[in-house]
Amino acid sequence: MSADNQILLSVRRLKKYFPIKKGLLRREKGQVRAVDDVSFDIRRGETLGLVGESGCGKSTVGKLILRALKPTAGEIIFTLDDRQMRINELSDTELRPLRRHAQLIFQDPYASLNPRMTVREIIGEPILVNRETQIADLDARVVELMDLVGLDSRYLRRYPHAFSGGQRQRIGVARALALNPDLIIADEPVSALDVSIQAQILNLLSDIQQELELTYLLISHDLSVVEYVSNRVAVMYVGKLVELADTEEIFRHPRHPYTEALLMAVPRISERDRPETYTLSGNVADPANPPSGCYFHHRCRYATDICSTKPVVMKQVANGHQVACHRSRDLSLKGL
Image 1: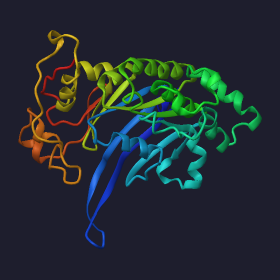
Image 2 (image 1 turned 180 degrees about the vertical axis):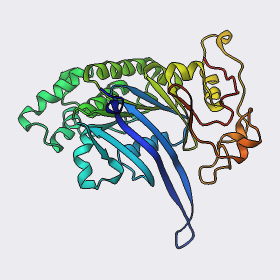
Image 3 (image 1 turned 90 degrees about the vertical axis):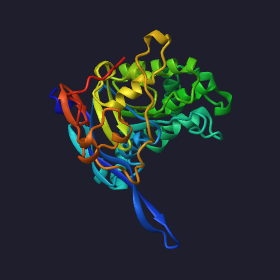
């Protein structure tokens, strides 16, 4: 298989600007740059971790890929059966057959399940809507999915309130798998769960990925979660990608100061294992009024004059390692 055929999803210069409207006539006075010129590829069978602080735009990227939001600009190319489809250009009618190939696992297992529907109805709904099986065969398919995610089939007709948070998230995973998708976007899939349950859900996702040959985009603010399950990691800051590399490379040899700061904040069992730490100065840049030059320069302890004046672009500094930093080649940053 060629390198191009290994790419399932390609995102190119993706942008999403939300208008700021003020006054009695609600005239547009500005824009919030939630996603600003983001590009990356996801290969078949891999897990790409997308990390960053809350509000950096990572969840918006997931919604744009699923076309829950319409992009302001850019391309989203989904490759299916050797056909490339530009999701951003499709009408709602043209998009509907493709939705079964990309599914979402929600962050909150309590809010994402309809309390008035049974497990059978929740998992079976996408199957019925897409006419994937006959009603007579629905129970068998739902039981098969429940077995796959580790739920007892005796719970088929129970309601969500009867389950724990971890069990509810398993129901959400089963629903995402109902249509045999190629891509699953997992938006903070374990952040609402107890720490003791998080590993179980992550192991479940890994096992299912191997069994069904799935591709994941894992969105998270937790670097330990991303390190555990991801093949590659992309780091976002104020709507922009600032670093992209293999997981081991980015954790051992970060090339962007923001990535270094995130790694320094990872909790350690022993203080002896903790590297020198520092507190980022200043506040996160305003996406409605971003600073000139590098968006991170006013918080960066390595910043020079060029960082505040010249826009920075992603460039490759090593094999498969991309970074958006003017000083990436002369800095020696600390990893884990």
